[in-house]
Image (tube, rainbow, N blue to C red; front, side, top):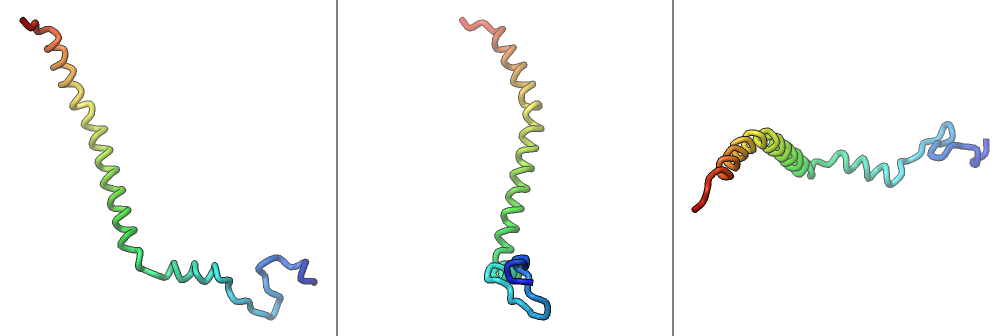
Length: 80
């Protein structure tokens, strides 16, 4: 089989091929733990933002109903 017929990235049988620079850098990146704290903070911040959004949406109706009744009352009051 000629070199042209081989699939890219495949070594000939009986030989070993060293990983490419990109693969070595990816493996090194995955083994490092330097960014672990940053990831934790991002996840924690996203969870808190989601919780805040759920609370705001849940309390929106509870705050709108009293505001509507106050508005209706104030429309009826005559100012002299």
